[in-house]
Amino acid sequence: MKGFFAIFLAGLVGSCVSNPINDLVARGTSIIPSAAPTPTPTPPLADGLRVDKNKRSKNVHNFFKAYGWLKKDEVIPDSKLPAAIRKIQKILKVPETGVYDAHLDIIMSKPRCGTIPQYNPSESLENSTLQSRYVLWGPKWDHTSITYRFVNYTADLPAAQQRSLVGAAFARWTQIAPITITEAPSSTPRADIYIRFMTMGPTEDVYAFTNMIADGLALSSGLINITFNDDFAWNDDRLFNYTAVHEIGHALGLSHSKVEPAIMFPFFEGDIRPIHPDDQAGIHSVYGWKNPRWSRIDSNVASKGVIQISSASGAVSTLDGLYQLRSTGQILRYNPAGSWTSVDNNKGTIQIAGSNNFLCQRHIDGTIWKLTAGSSTWQQISPASSNVIDISAAANQVYMRRKDGWVARYSGSGQSWLTVAQPSALASRQLAASDSATLWNLLANGDVVRSEYPYTSDGWQVVDSNPSNIAIAVGGEDFYKLQSDGSIVWLDSTEWFWRTIEDDESVAVYAVGSFVYSRHKDGSVWRYTGSPGVWEMLDGRADSVVVVGDRKGGVWEMVSGGDIYRLVS
Image (cartoon, rainbow, N blue to C red; front, side, top):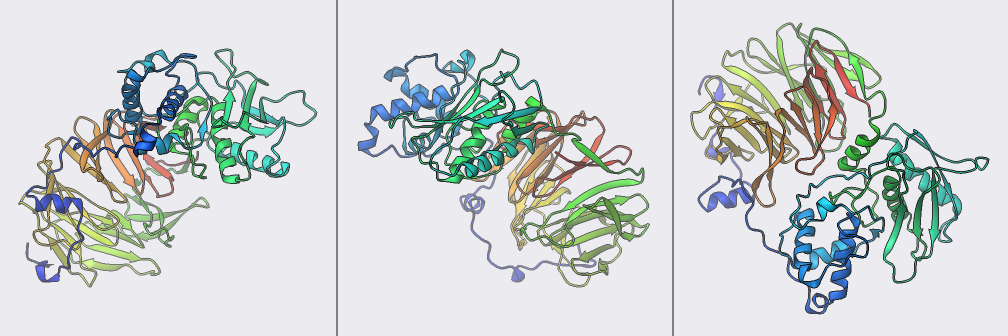
């Protein structure tokens, strides 16, 4: 414990910010339960709205139609409405009370899509297992050069602006799928997709719908119509663009997603937002990826590992980027222009780590060196020691794990380190820290402990005690753990319980910002879509060794043999 480490005294510690974990501790326990607590249901609607049975019935029927849960002209009797509402609540991941409450009314009163898929007999069952994810129509286009044509225009916007908005909406999909979509020239007799505006009547609340006509295998050219309800005012270009992106998803073969933030969710507000990972997974499952999917950016048998530095603040640091360490001790930084630049070349370097505005390296003698943004000189921040196992970096902190089981962090001055006292003498297996420098520690017995900055001497709290825990990861403020059965478990910090998000033979988990990645034992790499159990495969090769990413969705991997690849599409 002593030696060159400074004891971290309670007098150096400021007050900790209150949070739900501390509230749990105050009640005498810090173990987070593995099942969700009983949530407080959303209050029922005010009496005037609650008794509006027609509105309630109409909204429930519209929701069921959006997913093909009703046969044509089928009506849900009043006696079955509570069960139908519970089914909707299951999709929305809210308490399954069977009561039509204010939350449901807000969602189902939003602008909606009127596209109705075919009847789905398996999902229509009251007790069916509903997987929250994208849904496919089945058929797709049998050619990759797709055309569209306007039949008419709305009077709400200039025709040129409508063409520009729709063209931009098509481009949202062509950016992620290996297809081209262009406006059909007037000289051609027909287009694949037609766009039109039509009056649907003042009582119709559908904003748009898409006719899906296919032979069962391929979408039928010239028979796919995207129809906008011209009884709405389309002078809001955001709503126009969003609606167009949604309907184009249908015209490419996607049905309605059960993931609420997804573009293909049937109810929407009209805000312009990125294509959701669930939408990406859907379109990729139909058409595949743009080619090339991965681009090799280096091939060197001396490559030992890669890391990615990605600043949390949103401001780009001069040190942000991809780094590789070679077995010779050389550190190189990847230039997006396609070249590698040497950052340091010391044969004693055996590990690199980095975070906001700094890069660190550990030498075989235990010394640790730090390079700060704006500086060209490496600073030695620790003396030599055979007690150092590894280093890690997060937020604005540098940490080390020691052979004696203890953890320390760099004080920020000279070569002084501050001990972060353990809750027991058990050795630390892995460290991870959040953007706010909350430190997570996986112990040798599988316990997960947590301490908030600035880490009081008695600040560690055991939040999970499970011998099957084998790895941890933190992205932003979200915490994940990998278990020996191959499952990845996320800490739901809203309700404070553990939620399994993958149970499919994962052997490694990596998180950065809002992105989470999993590597399976077969070498394949997967990205989480945000819906529990739904992951998109990024690479199916069997020799992937390491995957890293940035906060904007960029992904890189190193494979056995030292080749390094960048995800292109």
